[in-house]
Length: 268
Image (cartoon, rainbow, N blue to C red; front, side, top):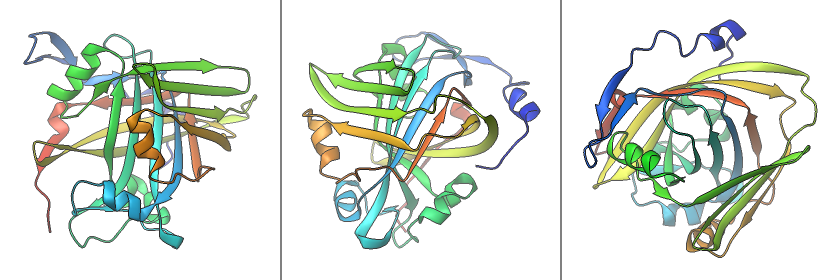
């Protein structure tokens, strides 16, 4: 992501204009845009079988990354939203970076490191939360397909883990080895676009982000997949044992605004 100064990071959420929005199914009032600050996030970026990813993606106009030896890319992100303008909740994102359009050039590692993912979007294969309000707000206001499971974070002096389960079955556990000491912080900012397939169309939500990046970043993580059906789906993708890259932050800021949501019907 493009670098910014500490001052730009501190001012990232300033000057937003808030408004009340009604959730259609319940009549509850929520404040939008939905902001986030001082929340902890960790992402493991793995290689996966491109053939298996193509089988999993629901449409041919979602073109996954293409790496050597028949590999592609999938991401697993865990966020502890302790400080938002709504009640705290936890969130898990299992995403696949894709280009949109049949015949579109497949993303590469190099292109995905460019600003705005080099024009790609993150297709949300699974989006999991652990509170009712975060589920219905996401689904009815922001165009997502969220569902609820149990999400439990634990932390030691050297690691941070998240366990995701449902009905006593584990979906997966992600453990990141966090460096004990921080040398300095970098600051990045970008615009991310995520894609959700809903009612036969693709919802695209773009949201600005700013991240405080502690250095050094983690270099070791382990993804342990469980026996839950979703865990078995992920196992079929043949995740690499080691991630390509790990991103960790204790201050990940963003704002989500339904006015930045658009629906498209991409084919060619």
